[in-house]
Length: 93
Image 1 (tube, rainbow, N blue to C red):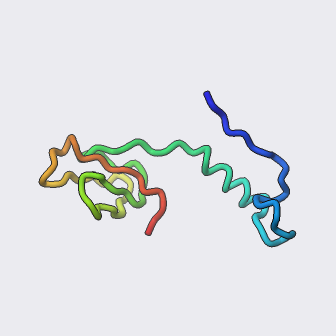
Image 2 (cartoon, rainbow, N blue to C red):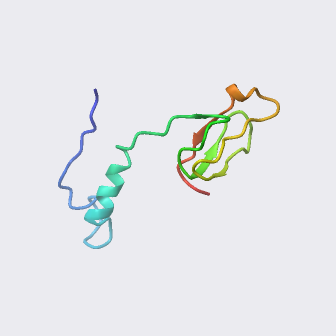
């Protein structure tokens, strides 16, 4: 297993910024923590959305949209439902 290597005591996320102009201890920890999150697996059409937010499907251009948690993920008419997968877009538009 490969683990990330981090310089623990940088004092700032960017070493060239003066005091007060960069990240705080809290925002630096949040920045590093985002690399530790495991990506959500793809969700097949017909399954419930596991997390509210923006999702997209490579089965159709421009498919990115917001789903609420528990909402069923749709299939596209030109694609078999078992072939339609939705991927977490991570960042809302």
